[in-house]
Image 1 (tube, rainbow, N blue to C red):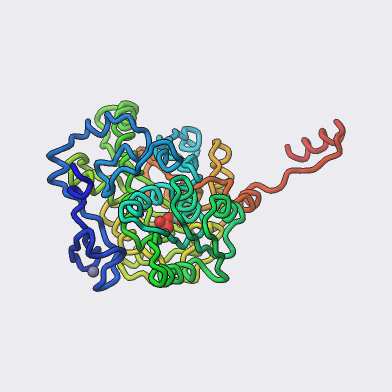
Image 2: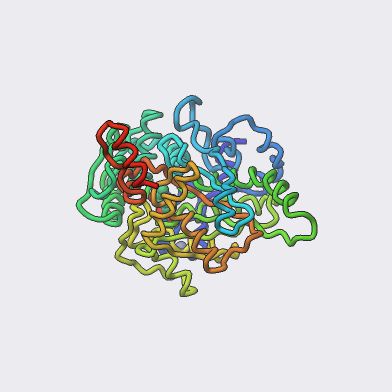
Length: 429
Ligand SMILES: Cc1ncc(COP(=O)(O)O)c(C=O)c1O
Ligand SMILES: [Zn+2]
């Protein structure tokens, strides 16, 4: 099958207009709506069974190439080729402490540039390669840029990244190390976003911006495909534990939300599987936003699809967004799966960083936001003890060491004597 034969084009998420693969590049020309990639589900259904995917020996997101609208990226031994296939851990003790019978965490921090964003950049670069894009540009709070810069360096693609000057130093270091052209903007992420769109137009660059380029959600949907595959065995064990006669709730997934593209992408992945007839019941998606950056949660709570800008302020820099660019689809991801939105304070987020650390997970604040959302959902009775819960850690704690230190405090410094050590240990106890 040629790659193009499964990729039919796009459908606007607002007005429903359909476009061919070459008719548009970013958003709907009529209303600026986000475009969903449309695959030829009929062709895919006739060519593939789930077993064809499950038996592939490629343990990365490229395992799902048959369901992606891109051709294979040439070569096979670069960081770009090893994105995805991230582990799921059972957090037994943490779950019990929350009153949950089963809590799992899918850890995205082991991706090549240490965040979930590698998924989007890997697939987007496959598209960039296909259309012979000379330069790929993105606005970023840090992770999307690092992911673009890292994956681009891996395959020799030119990349430009615009980030707010307030981005954590580790993220800026990544951008520079990977050799991208890095420009820091004296403004917000939203300012960088708008400038990137203008610059792409002016210089003929291919723009990767989150919630703007339709291919980012396609990369992000691979996390849903992995969860679907993992759940095939995990749910059997889960059912065995609960025993017969219990009404089995669907998997509930907690996703941290900034622009809303991760949760939209995950929703798209599950919708693709449902279209193929490979998934009977969609997992419930719960979006978690920082209270100081909650434009999507606000719309959801108001039962509206109108996303109103906020003046974002949160310790979780990756999800600090005034005007989310994928808000409508993000609202629908929760609504159409029986999920909801919760918001958490910066204190709850930092507490989440500290608590996850005690289970061996080092999350950046945005990743810990998802876990803080589980805690809040339990408090508010949104999730019951027998509901299986999966939380997504989207980024490594090494991305923002300053925030981590805020979460746990400083270590004492002592004279190198036993007496001083004993004193310090007493103080700690
Ligand atoms: C670590 C991390 N978590 C969550 C998000 C939120 O993703 P989205 O903006 O697609 O909602 C981001 C986005 O930058 C991120 O870097
Ligand atoms: Zn439209």
